Image (cartoon, rainbow, N blue to C red; front, side, top):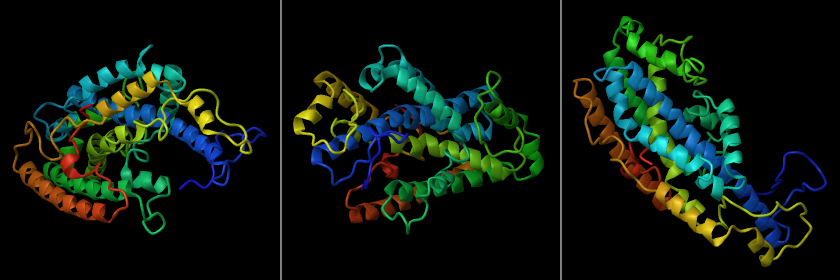
Amino acid sequence: MPVAIQLFQRKSDDNPVFLPTNAPYTWMLAKMYFNNADACIHECASQLLFTHLVLECFCVASHRRLSASHPIFRLLEPHYQFMITTTHLATSVLLDPGSLLDNLMTGGRKVAMEILLRSWKEWRFDVNGTLPKDMEARGVENQEVIFNYPYRDDAMLIYTAIKAYVTTIVQGHYDEPEKLTNDWEIQDWIKELVTPAPLGFGIKGIPITGDQFTNTNEVIEVITTTIFICSVGHAAVNFNQYDEYASPLRYPLFLRGQPPKSAQIELTESDILQHLPSKYIALETAVLSQTLSTHGTTSLGYFSELFQADPISIPALQKFRQTLKEIEKTIDIKNEERKAKYPYLHPTKLPNGIPI
């Protein structure tokens, strides 16, 4: 529950602190403008950049550097299904001049590109992309302090299961240190990911020594986070979009006019209506968010094409599926106890990759 809102970063006479004790519609408009800013960040950074665009780098590098028979290629490939096609379509549909974000988001394409550029400079694989570190960096890891955080609680269950699955396969294939250090394919793969552009992708914060893997723990961390973002990370910021964006009062991607600059003026319902988007923009936003909220691949751990057929991976995959079934039961129990159910990370509805 918000206790206070200040809409701009610099203190000034026309940048007041809004409170729940202000006039109801004044407080409502302050919340709407906060959510508008949050929606712009969500759509451009959380949803597009930190899942689609980041993971496309890993997908492209895998196809460039790893042979189709490589165990890490076979481990990752089911999670890359549709990724390049989807991301190619998404960037043009969302970011081109006259595109959806250009028309449906406050500030349009110019603001979207600025958000992408600023966010990319700050994002790190080992902090923002890795679930436990992300929780710790944002100060939300302690369940006793913040006890009602369904994303954290459900995501940690699945992150742990993914890591156990990946650990079995990685340690099984690299049971001797020399097998990893002498594997030029995986070393070229990680080198391309960390090398700055234009020779590489310039992913910051990948937990390796220099530009090489030196031990299996490094490989496990990178692969676990990659699969996690493809499945859980994308699902958490994607499949709830219709629930959030469909009402422009709840989570407006576009608002007209200027944010309120006085907490003392008593606004009316008519004032709120003046800031809402047009009927066309509201409907187009609802259609876009409904489209983005659809599911398009088989559920996590169940692949339309099985790439892994070796004696190390098959038992690991079977155990992973069994663990996911146990997590399903746990989340079902949690949702019965929650005031509002959180269905987005239920393993039966959790895709392997980024289909849309």
